[in-house]
Image (cartoon, rainbow, N blue to C red):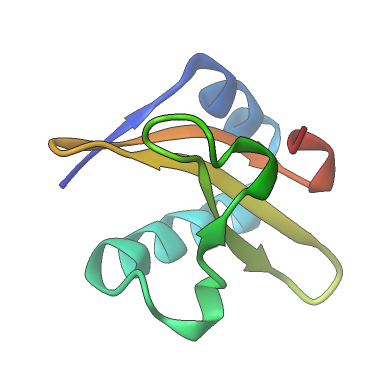
Length: 90
């Protein structure tokens, strides 16, 4: 499945330190292989479940911080909306 990034996702990724960016890439690879993996904590964002397709999130946790990726799954691609802390949610 192809990953398509929003301009906001790309901007937020550039702000992350290289170590965290590498972790994000590994978690996205895991997501593509097994979206049900418990470490991803994959779930629907309740405030955005009315959108089609609904907005979902996966979690990425380091020892000192927790960030999330919001995304939408379309039939032919996965749209990565944003990445950051809890403040990225409505």
